[in-house]
Length: 151
Image (cartoon, rainbow, N blue to C red; front, side, top):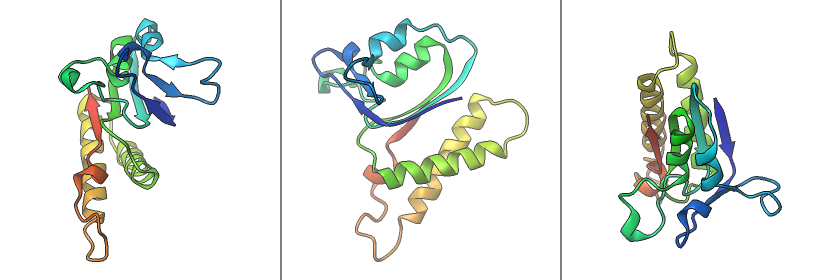
């Protein structure tokens, strides 16, 4: 399992130059172009807890697979979790913590089905936890629905 918890940037003009902002990103940018060139066969899961990692950039390209999550999938990861838009730190933390808790309870092999169910359950729990009368973001999908699973 590879887990990135950082920022993601979409390059609308050159989608292959979209990148994950690691600590040395200015000197050594980690771009979609580089991800696609990796050969990571038999890799089970990449969790990209970074904004816009499953966002294709320009509006006219939304149905295309030219985003960081797809790049990790093409590089050999059987399963990739990415985000479609900006994710708040609290939301990302809550979803990923619940996801890994649920994944740890799965028996047997790490399968696409187990990963999908763990993510679905984690997102549903986070969504249900946002439903309080005091919360202005009650059930707002922009808070609880940014993560998607490829695999």
